[in-house]
Length: 189
Image (tube, rainbow, N blue to C red):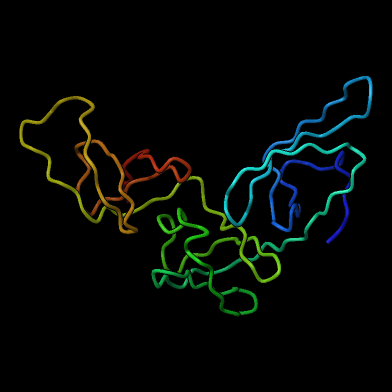
């Protein structure tokens, strides 16, 4: 824990506000000319994902938190918890799925991810911007259905439901945008 002047806060800084860990999503420095300069911050709560907008005078002290970036292997999910292993220390620990609901669609057992940890709590699971996933279930395309731009839904190996072009078949790999969950392209290995 350390103190940081609000004026020195940058996007991506980790702060403690109201006893909750936040990451700075946006920062705007305002110098009104009269009166003191201030900083407008948009913070994302790392436990609940709720957004908090606050303003601090640039001379105010804020509490910065020291987080660790840890390389971890995703072992498995038991439906309630993700089970990880620190690849450096081999320590195993759990992360509640409900705090990282979306991550489950983009993690395969055995893969390695960077986790942001603070006081034995995982605040963030760093996911790649794109993820290649196997199509586990796909409806068969109807013969004669050649409408350009026709789409259907498939289910990936991680249970993600994705809208794809009609030609995608079960057993094929597709690339998905992790942020939006949208289909990007078919992958031919």
